[in-house]
Each structure stands twice: as structure tokens, then as C-alpha cells.
Length: 89
Image 1 (cartoon, rainbow, N blue to C red):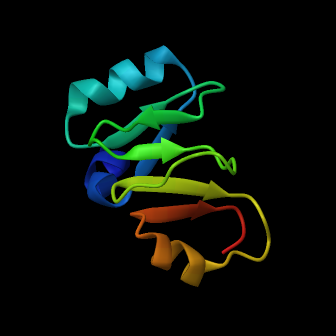
Image 2 (cartoon, one colour):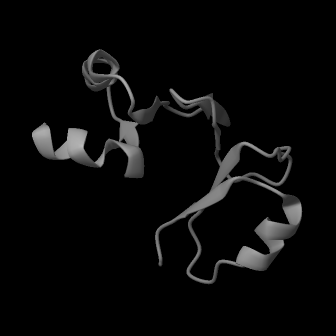
């Protein structure tokens, strides 16, 4: 946990259950989120974590998931979203 605390300003943590979310809440300062099959969820720091679906609306504080191997970052930049989470860097 000490390592995670030392890196907390650089991490976006996907909690897989309520217990993990509750534990991070105790430490303050982490950016974390918990969701199941939701199109959207709010992170602990107010960002909108968005599942990639064509009908989902984009906003300035939104992070979009992109599972594809060929991510078009320029397209996302033009949309004005906060960031993109990818599987292939």
C-alpha cells in the first residue's frame, strides 16, 4: 500500500469490488472508480469514465475507453475529451 500511496497522483484505479473502493476512500487523494456494466461512472475526482459506445456523449472531463489496436488520438483530441484509456500503447 505504501507504493500505491507514493504513486497516487499518477494512477487511475479500477476497483473490482466495493471493498477495494472503500479501502482507497480511507487514504484520500486516489483517483478511482467502481462500475459493472454501466455506460458511465464518476471517478472519485469527478471525471466521467465512459464505456465506448457510439451513442455516448463526450464532455471535457471524460475519459473514454478504446480497446482497439489502432487508436486515433487526433480524433479524441478534436472531441475535447480529458483522456483515453487504451489496451495497446
